[in-house]
Image (cartoon, rainbow, N blue to C red; front, side, top):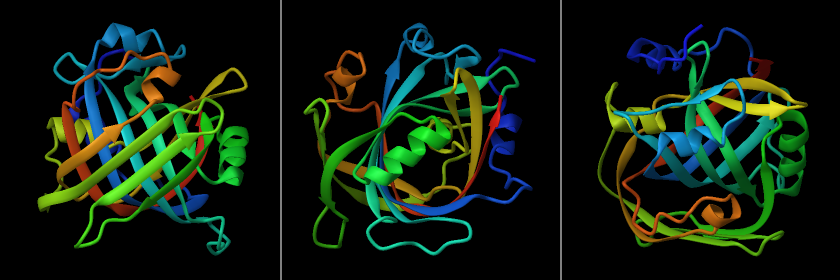
Length: 249
């Protein structure tokens, strides 16, 4: 048991494919990763018992990630029209548990698929929120555009972005690796901490031109708005993902 930040070997080991069978398959497409440096003590105060804020060179990070979910399906079923394709927007930070396993803590996951919201909240203990979302995927002639309106609060988020330059994978040990190469999530369900794995190839990421990035997620979750552009921004065209069962921590 350790409360020290994960070392590079532990971070690399997180990318190994689990030996067990996945419960779901999905594709995450045209992801925008926006990240801001944050005070570690402020983040730690928001976390449940059993999780410690993960830091890079002394800084905590808060991320906002809009993207498209494609062909979401249980392992034994095909994708279903009208159910398996939707948008998602999440507000997140980075943590590790007492065993030094790095992962993601989600403050919120906004989604325009009501059934996905119900299932994710009830089965996985994740803070999914129903939102009205529209947008368009990027093409050679136009950037990606992503718009989200929270039904409960009226909070609006809007993003317009496009890839620029060549793609690359994040170098192990780099800030980009710390921010995007995450293969474990943590959730709190029935008063207990749980952990789940995902597996996918390393992200092919690129520099990104962010023409617009406005969001009410900060206010809706008690964070002061950073009032500055993201300290780090990249995008990825996407990855195919295997999702594994939650296990108690």
